[in-house]
Length: 147
Image 1 (cartoon, one colour):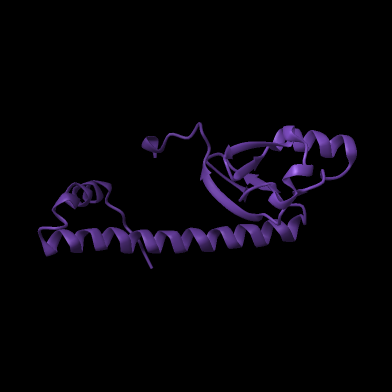
Image 2 (cartoon, one colour):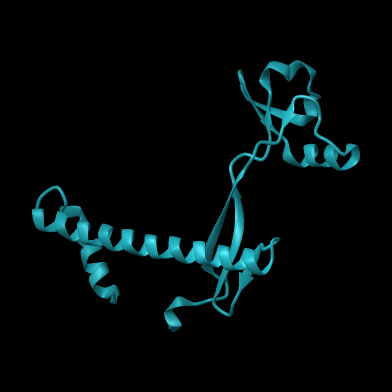
């Protein structure tokens, strides 16, 4: 399958978006963009899976790979630590900040210092399983207008 993207056409379609509520034609144009986005997202997902698979085959501790233009690296998503709020009265006050009257947020830097000094988590602090996902992006120095 060959995909040709006309950036000027995409801009024209996007510029018509405000007419979405007025014309069926504008809705069809937006649908074209969404369809293209779905196809591109699926292709990027497949590329990530292949990069991850190959990277882990070559090195079980694979973290990233970088070329001249693109890099692929793991990122963690989700909260690094959370508090067992039923134990809040036993957790040292410097380990969290009180955001609202009934919600607390873990102070990551202080908890990590504690872990480093004591080889373990403080009482009432939990490190949940965090989802790791591969992201692909341009390097900051890449200028897409030159290609």
